[in-house]
Image (cartoon, rainbow, N blue to C red; front, side):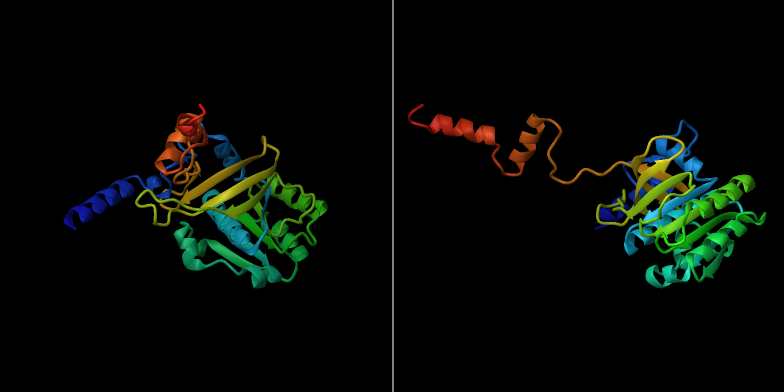
Length: 276
């Protein structure tokens, strides 16, 4: 028992000394002092202009809310104004203060506003983004009702002029054409801990960039480390027992699992066939 405790203490000490290791053993830290990856460049673009993020289901919308909260908390240098449609709050819930703290965001930096409809949300976002006291604005809408190109163009113009980011968060993926710089579809993803396979890791998202003015669209698997306030692009962990890349390696893996490859079975049958 004492040896096991010592081993765990050693693992914890290494992880606390390198906090990004807690988030993902397969990760690549972004926004570090080196050439950023493709997602690092896209993430930097999220710090200004209007961006649309969609969660197709209630679970996806919760993940999208967490991603937007983390991005706004890192990008904003002042107050974060979060404006939500009343129906969206009733159907998908509201932000949780202790959860914001876990994301490294001080709830005192956030101002929450509830609006009766989606058009009211868009109007409030347009007004808030022009305030010098505001660092970022988030608008929650339930679906694409009332979200059109004209309204989002006004928000995008005000956001560009003020130099502050605005994030439009949609519960559903039926929003039509908008003036957003980027458009994302967000879903939760499995997290991985470097301490033990059974432990929870840092918040992780599956991000599909479906529209971008800054480069090609792509899929990203990203986690967030509140301790360092950095996003980490994650490589999917290999599944246990998955076949290797080459046929020969795959045959060895299958043999270890107690399954005879087809070619080996044919050779055995040829040897035992009295006619051969």
